Image 1 (tube, helix red, strand yellow):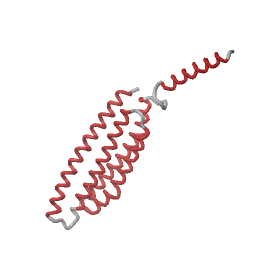
Image 2 (cartoon, rainbow, N blue to C red):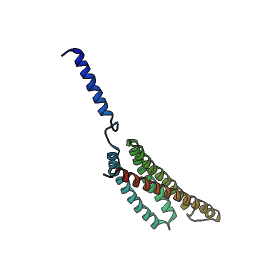
Image 3 (tube, rainbow, N blue to C red):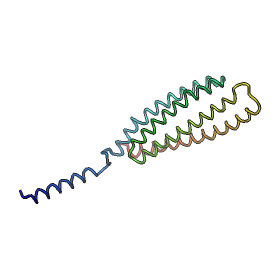
Image 4 (cartoon, one colour):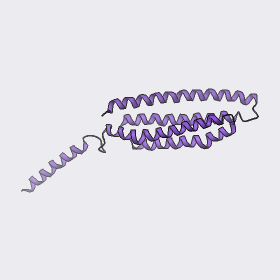
Length: 175
């Protein structure tokens, strides 16, 4: 075989290999596969953490009559737990490739940021209800309560956006 034929054959082989490797995702995972992985390695662990957070919320409700303990529980337990959850969602975000999946996960991160802000405001609110409570601190707590309600509305909007995004992805990538 002549050297020209060998070189030509190798070049054709390289072109074919390059074409095969560039068709599809750069790391070899399809959007459908990435979504399935996101569901099992992203959504499920975050959902488990949301169940734990709901339990923590139940405990918080039981200690609300003790504003100092409730405030401490928020600052020492709930907020750090949500921050840890947010860190998990951010790590997940860094590993995602598909833009649609990244956008849905970004909604989760924004939702967690709002939850942190909401609980921080709740801690402020409770701080103002630690006896003795003055008329001034009561009035200030009403303003903070209004802020909490605004943040909660934003959390609810993010929840709706997240659910709609997941529904869209499920429809798009159903097997």
